Image (cartoon, rainbow, N blue to C red; front, side):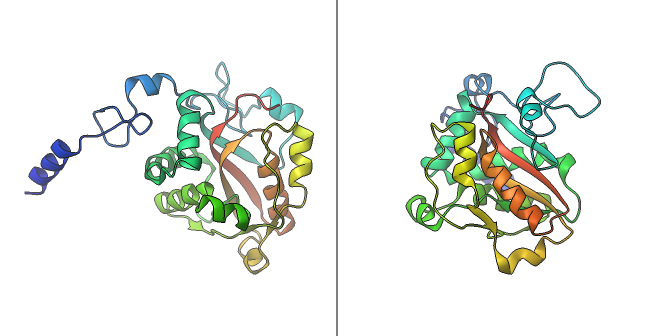
Length: 241
């Protein structure tokens, strides 16, 4: 009966590509066209930001950007490049109210960060300032982090970080301007600081460009006593300005 019911539902509501809505063979999948426009971070990747790199390596290597601008966190991963289908999915989640994307995107994230997690890792999102949260109605990084923690069985803290002050958009800013804009803007929420002492942390965000936001959160967490910090993003801008 259950199998028949599922077949009936599938006939009424066939699986659709999560990016464009075309028919696909499996739930939460991409059609051929959208798949071809998605650059997933697989194989050899930068150990600090996750961007795909040419060749093969048995040891940890860094991309040119992370060599030039060392990161304060230990290791980082991303699911895909911020281009083509990757950009479309990020924008749909961030500005298009596409919360239906959270489950499949969190599944992709879970596979991406498997090697970074330890049993006691705490998962937390990059925060939005309360004024921006009121405008957007939800924090896309928090939605991804919550679903990721649920899938991996790790502890999750939605309000580990606080935006101490509002910041202007990072769009169009240089690397230096991005870091200046975030200086002191992200802090550890005082009542949550005890959760971090001597504990590994995975910070979740939707996109990494220059790394300024992730750096600000990492430095705040290190000051609060976090032991080892890793990061994961849904997408990585291929080359930071």
